[in-house]
Image 1: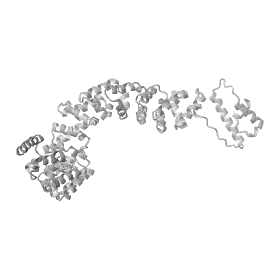
Image 2: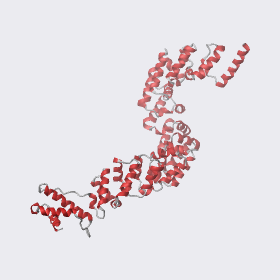
Image 3: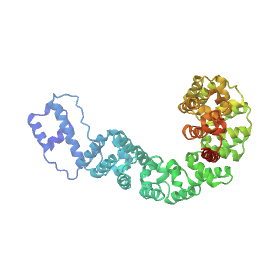
Image 4: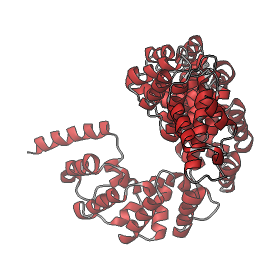
Length: 512
């Protein structure tokens, strides 16, 4: 032992060391050391340094000796050296460096005194949920208590077993980083509560993957979740459908967010809960807008377009996304365009009820192209007819509109003819080109008529070819002849035509 102490006090004095002394000191390193009263890691550390310095002597007696850096975890007193080395190896395998390990231990004292097995099992459990690699590294460095908190194991077991591991790993990471372990208690109970309220088991993973789990589940009591379902049920028989379509609704606070926003819509509808429920079912995302945002859009439609609350709500019923349209970039310039075309508030309301997409479509990639096509075929700018035509073509694509125009031109119709037809029947610009071609072929070949007849009755192109056009023509051609009026043939109701068909059958039997 005296030799070992001599070497420790002057490890680089190789000239004073004989081979025999080296041999005896080397044997001391491998013999059991009496550690009574001395921490084990201190002896191991001294022995390691001593061995490293003698290796330096053997390799040439260099005066520049590199000190062997001891395992970091061995620096902390009170920890078993074998366990510390295992933990250190585990962390290194995850990709956590020495400096990060030191910070982890300082940040989470419980981890410093943890044994290897439970920490290793916790890491394996996290990996079983798909959290590994960089994600696992970031989770542990952000929240080292995920390795020691007792609340984590029940959560992992619930996600892995009952939810069949269908929660996405990034979603689990966000939960574990944001929520303190104490808020994870009861997570399974609250999820089962959602299922009891009607969310199908096959949809529960979809809901949980699309909410903020901390706000929607962990920080809310079971009573708050219950109140949310009860409140939404007032406006929809199946409140669960609203949540499945928009799971983020569960993120919102009932008193400060959901109730004020729904109340605003109810007041706009003049107290019609059922109509409000229709809007919520059609676009649950409307609840993501603040009460101030909703009020700003309504006030703009009142003041700029001259619409009443009742008219505004009817527009909202057919196009709830009106609240998604920017007032500055979409609502203002488009309503201004309609006013330039000579439409008053009543005209604007009627156009928006039929063509609400006019407020939502992109101008640069949609409306501008269609506007140019309409002006090119002969529509005059800033006219009421142009505004109506623009409303009609919102229901078709730019490509489809161009094909329709090209089809009419290929049958000998002029641009002026197309404008004439579309003024009488604006929907003609939005029909499917293939269907139009079939009807025009039947008009010319099957009925022996001229394509110019469409100028008087363009609505012909809107009727079903087999069930309406062919059927009625075959029934009446033997009685009325081939020169019958297209308008009178097709525009009468099915009931009226059926009565006339019976009369025709009676006449044929009497004639026979």
